[in-house]
Image (cartoon, rainbow, N blue to C red; front, side, top):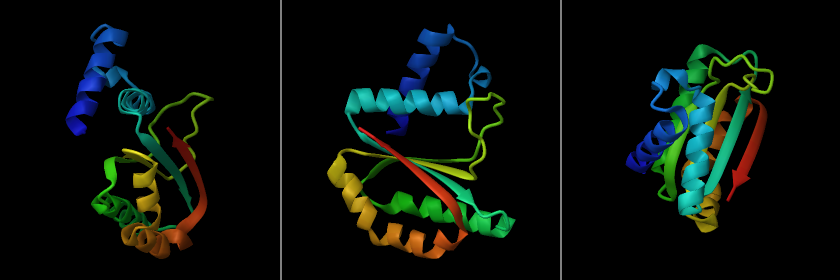
Amino acid sequence: MAVKLRYLYSFWLKSKLNNAPPENLKNSTLIKTAIYYIWKKYKMIAHHVLFWLKADTTDDQKIAFRKGLQSLEHIETIKTIHIGTPAAIERTVVDTTYTFSLVLFFEDMAGHDVYQVHDVHEAFLDEFRPLFEKVVIYDAE
């Protein structure tokens, strides 16, 4: 899937930006474009989770949290995973107040449903839920 994502990004970049260098792109634009093209071509389920961690979360806890997010890639129904933090974008329409972003793609709703009750996902929630200040989820098909 990573190769397909790079191909789609390259195609989009060439057609929309007249071969502008990647550093001219904003990270959120790349993610949104990749989500759109993957969904359009493969009709996959996108599961985007934004995490706001509590203000007193330490750097060590944030490192552990990122590792916890990375552990989710071991769930067999996840086809693509992206873990990120807010990009340095200064536009009034861009929300950069969250701490971590997680974007997962599944082939279908059945794959998403497996993920929701998977032991790895449940273990992640059990360990890190105490750090959550706020969580917002967007699912798209």
